[in-house]
Length: 358
Image 1 (cartoon, one colour):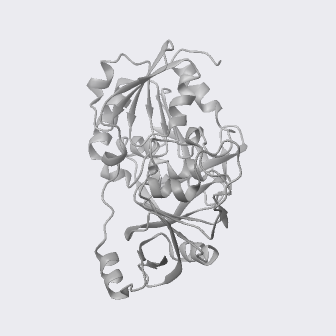
Image 2 (tube, helix red, strand yellow):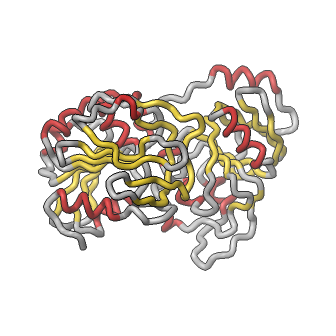
């Protein structure tokens, strides 16, 4: 079916529909990764977003359910140049088109994604709408985009009930802001028992689990929308329990300590982002997916040190707090997809909790 993407600046991109073809409004972002689309689609941090793939051929190895980072895909729409309709991979469970159709995710193919990506880089992330059919009303689309607001998405992607993973001697409490499965797997394989709590669980309730440490996870949206979580994290820091924060969790801890965050022009989304470790003068290649960062000018040096910075734009990529019990990173050391260069940070967390590297 014919389809049209319209951006809030009025630009339009024609294409063909795939997946579950229904009109949708979203925040349009781009990802530069060449692979890892099953993990991307099922990463809760993409909730509410229409993802444009800069790499031109997507779907050539299908979807393997074991690679999913949550129980379902969370993107609002998926936009590609060329869709591979015949996947070739012995692990493939389903082709990409069928996967999206089964999960009610609209897709758009045959789009000039090179031009679209360049527009998003120059103009920044924008709201947009995808409409399907032969009789698309451009004025109606403009009005809908103009009135569209992306509501807080953490309550949507977080778990509703607590659950426990692993049976190791180290106990980790994990408030779920939109956790990826590989964060939990990375802890379990290092000897942890992980209890996953809803995002709005109080610090006191989490402490009833008697954890050795707290893992703050990735998640979607503006961190300033998570006011209750920020309030609870002030208690976490004051208590002095070992804490490791990733992505949104990193931003929330910074806000809890009085620092500020801001929205990037077009975000960092891909699996080859270089970051520099200032403490060791080394550069690591990382997987990233975020639209907000901590404002370095607001960091109190008596509270935290900047440990990692982006080699692309100099933005803050990681903090070490002076308490010695809390550290955070903006990137994804668990990858999925992406390089595992910074997996050692999980080992650091284990050591902080009194364990040893396995």
